[in-house]
Amino acid sequence: MVSVTVVLDEKGLLRHCQVWGHAGAGQLGHDVVCAALSVLSRTALRMLAERADVSVQGDAPVRGNLWFSVSLREEGARPFLEALTTFLLEGFRSVSQEYPAYCTLHIQTEGRL
Image (cartoon, rainbow, N blue to C red; front, side, top):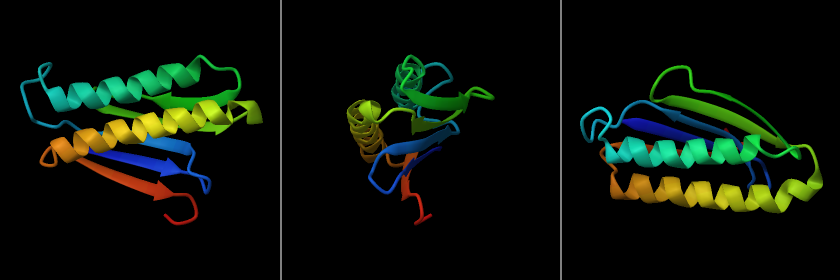
């Protein structure tokens, strides 16, 4: 089972994302659930890392585990981060709804953890 945790700030912007575990929906390297979650989270992390107007930290300490945290450096990055947040949440929701036996999604808001 993969556990996905997304933490949003009080305005609904992405602050933290953690994808932990293995789905077990297929053989290692052929698991569509793991592949979908990996593509979503790694693409988001790469897009964030390419921008100078956001600060991002993260790690993938072992295969199947990835986390990152993000904050705005410049207010001009807000529309980008809003769009990325929406995209990532919709992608995670889609996977967790289609494969509920293999993926759980937890969405939290800072201050209401």
